[in-house]
Amino acid sequence: MAKIIGSPLPNIPWEDKPAACKDVVWRSSLNPIVPKDAIPCANSIFNSAVVPFEGEFAGVFRVDNREREMRIHAAHSRDGVHWDIQPDPIDWQCDIPEIANFEYGYDPRVCWLEDRYWVTWCNGYMGYPTIGMAWTLDFKTYHQIENSYLPFNRNGVLFPRKIKGNYAMLSRPSDNGHTPFGDIFYSESPDLTFWGKHRLVMRPTGGWQSKKIGAGPIPIETDEGWLMIYHGVLNSCNGFVYSFGAALLDLDEPWKVIVRGAPYLLHPSADYERTGDVPNVAFPCAALVDAPTDRITLYYGGADTVICMAHSYVNDIIDYIKANPVK
Ligand code: BMA
Image (cartoon, rainbow, N blue to C red; front, side, top):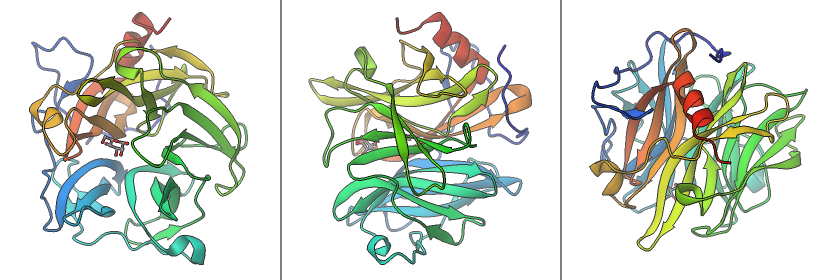
């Protein structure tokens, strides 16, 4: 059994696995936990990040507004299920004039790293998507730094500690549209501003992950490797289908894949994943883990419209991908 290198989270939002469920990952019976119109300006609220904060939970949520602009809002919850979402988007504080002009932002992730929370998101720069970064201590004031990469890039996901002396991030080079390709890359930085030493981690393979792939939640450290949950896309005759699965990456050289699951963990099959602004999307952006009990709760967007939760055990996911690997 792999040992999780992490903290207790006894108040993790949780439901036991239904007796009839044969899957490794099961959906919350409360789904969708955040409806599309939870605040007046919202057209849809989805693909969002959640972290433990001061005994409760902080959220950094993707809100597409009724002009269909992509914005990021702060949120707070006592239990990880019921959320108070700020009515106005985050007002990023930035003293770099070239970066300070916010254009659009979406698909945020949040990572506790050393002494503060870092938000990464897909950030519009001169009309092009790249990875934006900002830090916060209180989820009220957010200090934006340089974009991490040249466009085009999406799905920037930090590792929660330095690896071999450098900060580390996964990302997914892309194009300016609905990218018909996409591999997961790994990059390092001495200071969170200058990123290099780029390494290929994984390419698409078959089936549900045949078109493109992108990292999801912050990787989870275990003594056997980093558990990376990622989305994969199938190009069906009715458009893209977003499912998610998992892989285990080497602790010191995370571009080396130890094992990668061939079947998906969750595939859009509930109504709220199949019907919405973009049908057939389950897009994970965050995970909560209670290390002593092995419990994991995933947050994912349903059909680009709502926020959902799913539960599992970290070791059940690891055992499942080991038993069903991509060969
Ligand atoms: C991707 C991103 C995600 C979205 C997905 C499905 O390119 O834009 O935010 O969930 O497409 O539309």
